[in-house]
Image 1 (cartoon, helix red, strand yellow):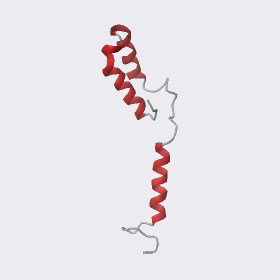
Image 2 (cartoon, helix red, strand yellow):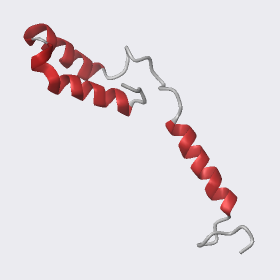
Image 3 (cartoon, rainbow, N blue to C red):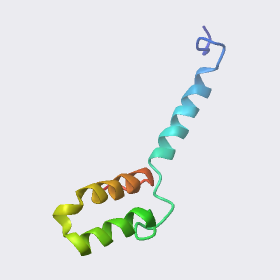
Image 4 (tube, rainbow, N blue to C red):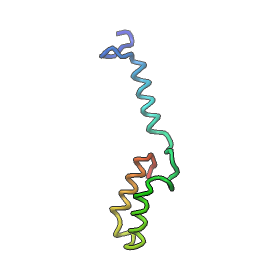
Amino acid sequence: MGGMLTGGVPANQNNQEAITKASEQNQKPKKKICCACPDTKRLRDECIVEHGEDACTKWIEAHKQCLRAEGFNV
């Protein structure tokens, strides 16, 4: 086939696209963790102050999910 994959796309182009996508996933977050997700952070903190950590798992998990979406490993 001479270095071509099905669909007429060169094999090295597909490899480059896969490398680019993998490197995008492994990049460091663009923000500091303290500045990421201010809305969920505020809700989490207010809940913990008013009701205690045990009553706020919903907001804690929402904040963690937001941080993961920003590229943090929490």
